[in-house]
Length: 389
Ligand SMILES: [Zn+2]
Image (cartoon, rainbow, N blue to C red; front, side, top):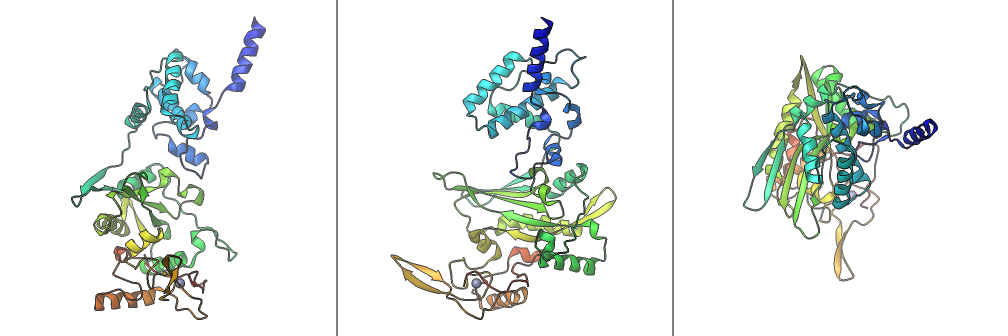
């Protein structure tokens, strides 16, 4: 009998899944310890559960055997079920069956479907991100503006900030953002202009892209989010370290996004002036942006990439040729190229304002010009060619 119990216990131990083995991370990259800890609610100390298997958590009863409360236990289990749902690609019906099974064998009384399970997890989270909802135009255009200062303070609270790691890359390889000329120039200007401790300054990379909800719908959403360049690359895009600046819900492609970006740029300018955290002032500068070609033309106020002067790297007009039943805008090969840089961008911008029409592809001033170190169009000096030609 004792031998049978021993075998049973051994079998249980072998089949136990430990929480430390589970991946709570919802991002595709950067799966490390830091990430796992970050993804769990602040109130939960992940060390608490290191020595307990799921089986232990499920079968533990009585206060002596129960190192953590039922509330935390059900949170962990709910999180596991959601992880299983996403990574195992379960259907909602299978999810309901899994929850039913767990409710039969435990006394945790878990929420019975996906919606209630997600809601119950969210209701336990103390920290929330506040947002403001704005409607504009009679069509379905809703803009959610998120408080960036609050989100940054949360990173300080979680000890993700302050951080400062600038790798010294002795080779000429471009391995990270710090190795590029634009970042180096930003750093140089920062020291020159502010004469401040460089550790108190951080930079953002801004990202946005329109996502269509489905092929049958014209509704698209445009999330605008920021990553902090000074965070280690493996953690930089981890979901908890990303700052959400706003989300635009639009019926079709928005004709103008100026109104949407007004509030975002204003928040970013405030962060350039400084944010008081405890007794220190930290400043945040947006210096780069990543967009696809249609979004880039919309944001930088340039002609579209398939128009005359549509190349953002050079000032070549290109030409239109007929091809099959339609036309293509092409850029014939040229030995000598007139490459774009910040100074000729300003020149073209001036001309577009003066004559009220696009000049060499530049239509108008972009809202990014209001930011101190954001150069809408600039070229790294290391390259002297253009892909379009
Ligand atoms: Zn070009």
